[in-house]
Amino acid sequence: MSVRIVKDVVMEKFYLESIRKAGGRVEDLARSMYVQFVLADYNLYKEAEKAAGPDVARKVHKNARLRYVPWIIKDAFEDFRIGEVKDKDVSTVGRIARRLYERTSCPF
Image 1 (cartoon, helix red, strand yellow):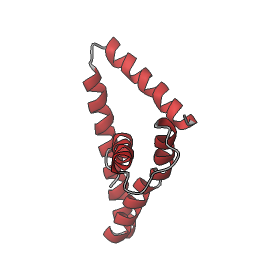
Image 2 (spheres, rainbow, N blue to C red):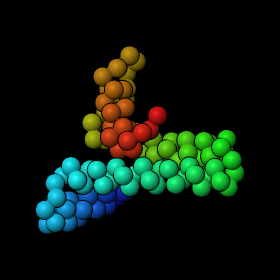
Image 3 (cartoon, rainbow, N blue to C red):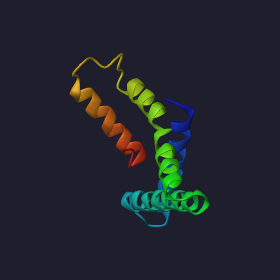
């Protein structure tokens, strides 16, 4: 497991404990994290658009997403104990795609 994921897990536990102490639920944590993600994502796009126009903003937005894909795939290979993906191994590719979605919410 990568150091980044370990730190993410520690932070998620901290947030979850804080929400529970405040009388919240896991769904509240998920909702607040999703809202934060959407706001950060939106602000990234809008600031790039303001600085360089919509074409550059789309490229910046896409590249910001794609930079996470290699480490998520690497983690998926480690987590699922995959040595290699065989030709036409749709279920493994599907599991990796699901991991991408779970980790980034909107990778494609």
